[in-house]
Image 1 (cartoon, rainbow, N blue to C red):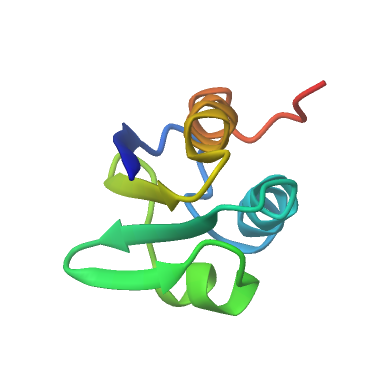
Image 2 (cartoon, rainbow, N blue to C red):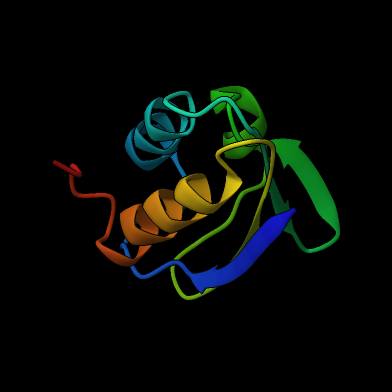
Length: 89
């Protein structure tokens, strides 16, 4: 299991477009992905789950990955969040 806590620095937090970008990136990996926010845990590959968190700018989320490519998944997803959900090449 790999995990990292990151701060949401994009103005929209984890709402529609950022949530969709997160899910798109998470689905590139075989590992199970979860997001933990204020005691709630959701599937990181579910746009509805992510949006239900209601995480806003300046708040912290923890990303957890379990599986054969967990290290790569954590790195890519943390980079996505810290780059304000700009597309990763």
